[in-house]
Amino acid sequence: MSLKHIEAFRVVMQTGSMTEAALRLHTSQPQVSRLISQLEAIVGFALFQRNGTRLLPSIDGKRFFQDVEKAFAGLNGLEAAASNIRTFGGDRLAVAAMPRIAGGVLSKAVVQFKRDYPDALLTIHSGAAATVNTWVSSGLCELGLAILYDGDPPGTNVITLMNMDCVCVLPAHHPLTKKKQIKAADLEGEAFVSFPLGSGPRERIDRVLIAEGIKTRTVLESDLGASVCSLVDAGMGISVINPLAALEEQRNLDLQVRPFRPAITVRLAILLPPDAPHSRLVAAFANHVRSVIDSALEHVRPYRR
Image (cartoon, rainbow, N blue to C red):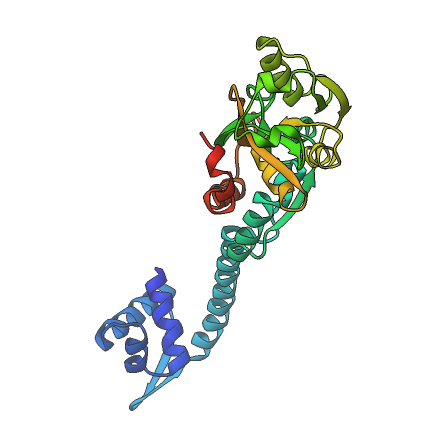
């Protein structure tokens, strides 16, 4: 007994005609008749009674049809289950990102992803880079987006999306705004808004300044790029920061942004847990993140590597 036998029987029962069944099944009437005869031989009883040109189901045929319909209902349920799995219905994805990324690249990727997979459930967690790393490496989040100032964070697999050079941010009326490019030597003795000691940005920037023999005056510290930019805008000092944060904050602040040399290159990257197998859901969302990078970050292009 094959699926072809059952399909032929089912359509004949529904239409009451082998000719009509043949049309629906895109085959010939003799082929349908042959399949019904074969099925009757297999089940061991007549499925139909022929009364002239009329084709009526036998009592046994009616009982068999009820069981066939139950089986098809089960198959339809399997098809629905497969469709649900295919479109990530009910699946949850926890994504971590630094605040500026969460409100920019990530939000655009989420909108696009939900258009394609409306039944998938996404949870967004926002925190500083070190916090994002911890959430991903611990498995709390299946995917993270972060700016990496140095090597790969421990306990994560890293996919680099973009390399870009840090910029210098200055208050609107600072004397250094007259320069088209800020060099490390220009920062000598300047009030500096920095990231906290031990953080990736602080260590990377300090290494460059020390190598250049430059001493700044750290007046304030913050672990969030948005806060650094706000403090600079308020005239508290100047800073060096990734261009993604600087250019986004410049839209709402009277902030000046200049290229900085020597170049401090950082990475926008996807972080994944180290050992866990990556699901289709994670892979699909990562692809959506990649697809929005160029369009969403066009304004960063002058600082890309």
